[in-house]
Image 1 (cartoon, rainbow, N blue to C red):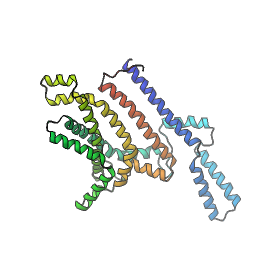
Image 2: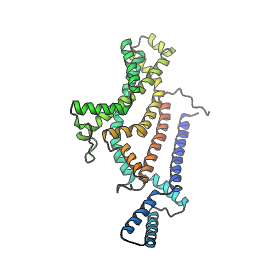
Image 3: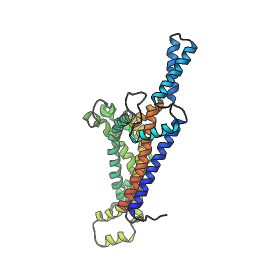
Image 4: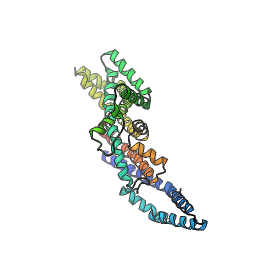
Length: 335
């Protein structure tokens, strides 16, 4: 099969998967009721009850408030019209306004996501570079002692919970060295300001070291499985430097490493950010998600869910593209 035709099919499949996610999200919202209606009804009823209104007045005013709430959000329209409007809104990245902030959901997510990316991007870079280096050396290093140390390091770090390392790092830093800059992110300053960069440095290092172990294990396993193949023997027989041997091995080992990278990225957005941002008091993506869930901030919850699902779908497509680029030997058969 032509590679570009195969890639086009993967793109269409990704767009279809994204449409399914958006449609399922709409169905969950449309057919389960809006918790905001109950909140509006309760608020109006409580206010009128305090003013001494009768039960009939409370019921009438509450119904009018709920009706106004539904009209303002087009909830009084037929389902099919709401669905079309929903698709158009998602295409425009218009997910409404947060209940707790007078800010559009996409703007709010973008602001908080910038904070999260401030430590996720360098952390993933540390994990990728460090994992490749440690994994390769532990597999084909000339010094057996250092190779065993590298292998032991990866298994030790892999078995230690990330939140435990973060807590220990904060305690040691604050009480032994007086590193008071470890926590206290300032939303009024830019992400790249000196004040905030200091508070993003340790989360990036801890995230990177936590992921290095898994990256290194995959690289080591992939390199060892290929080391005895004919092309490696031929490269060595030609008298090439070890760095050239490693380059050939890593090119083939990139396939499982790419899969692991995208899996780790999605795992970081779904799990790690909650732990890291809680420990370091960072007002990022994880903190916003947690607060939205606890306060039943439906527009933000929907926006977060769509974003994470979108990252997974786009990441899967980019993974397919990377496969095609880095390993042309992959067969693209109809099956």
